[in-house]
Length: 230
Image (cartoon, one colour):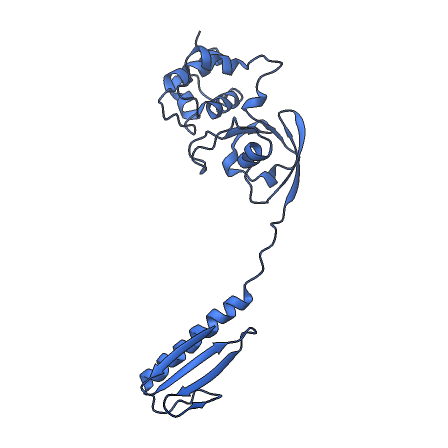
């Protein structure tokens, strides 16, 4: 790498070697070339000297950075053993992979949706050891030895979960993109302290967003399973 600086009849070239050392070559135009070991360039003003010093500093910094750049290599992986929908599973994933991506891309369980990927919409809700969690905010590496249930694991022997049937009966969805997360949260709500009123149900499900606005049907479905409505 080289940096060049010129003032009047003089020009200075700074070359960075492969080891990061600075090779200084001062070339005086019109009078041949002179190899100079230091910052001794005749006829420079203070401002010109400072500019030359800055040029050398930048050349050294960029040269050192280039020589210190580590070689790219394969990313490390971690092995994870967990139970998914009642079945033992073993994954080998990058430590940065979320549970959502592990489910969708490694186990092909695509019922859990990636909506916002920031934990704000609830479309990725799954059950972790019986508790609802946002899988987009959960690292796969943290679920070692735990049990995960997704929307694909709610039905038993071809029989839909009562909450799934209730969503169908009460039209608790429109486009369906958020429905898996809504149902997973609703099923978890059955075991959580939640008041009997519709407003309290809405509050308990406030982390799940339905952009279609199917909330009346969603609340009606939940309340019918809770026995609060027929």
